[in-house]
Amino acid sequence: GENVEQHPSTLSVQEGDSAVIKCTYSDSASNYFPWYKQELGKRPQLIIDIRSNVGEKKDQRIAVTLNKTAKHFSLHITETQPEDSAVYFCAASVGSARQLTFGSGTQLTVLP
Amino acid sequence: EAGVVQSPRYKIIEKKQPVAFWCNPISGHNTLYWYLQNLGQGPELLIRYENEEAVDDSQLPKDRFSAERLKGVDSTLKIQPAELGDSAVYLCASSSGLADRDTQYFGPGTRLTVL
Image 1: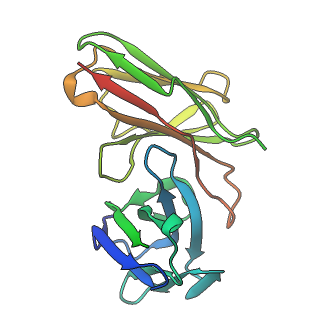
Image 2 (image 1 turned 90 degrees about the horizontal axis):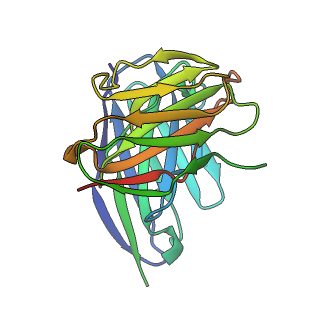
């Protein structure tokens, strides 16, 4: 089955700096890659996703890049703010969103 | 639009007791998922329903866990008897199944503590 590895497990940045979280996946058939943000005690919330027919997608301060050849994808957050502090999970799925395999999460802390 | 609803939000029980969790998905979402999330880890799928049919329950510990979605809408996940290692957050999610636009939306979860 699919295996998703996520790095780093913790990341601290100064407010205003950029943050990058990377994930690799094992199944070359995977074609859907969402990113979820989970604040302490709250539900995971989708922040951005990408499907394998595009290499990059951007939404305001967040962007995701996908390299299907290398089987990795990354989340980029620019101009970080304290409210960006949370755990971020990447996931990968074959065919649709129905078979998500999640990474182990990255605790992002934005220092004021 | 109402999101995925779960209840209870918190549950504390003693080991060997039964416990049940309830989930109501987003209206119109045919696919429903139950996940287990241990502290500091990503969600792990327990079971996936397409309407009322369980199409992926390979990770569900069937000796003590059971689930049902009788009318293809809301769902119940049960543990009987609970063990200490079952302490975790149980997340429910739903998705519409629409090709190229399918996205999983999560509920707030039920935090289970087994004493």
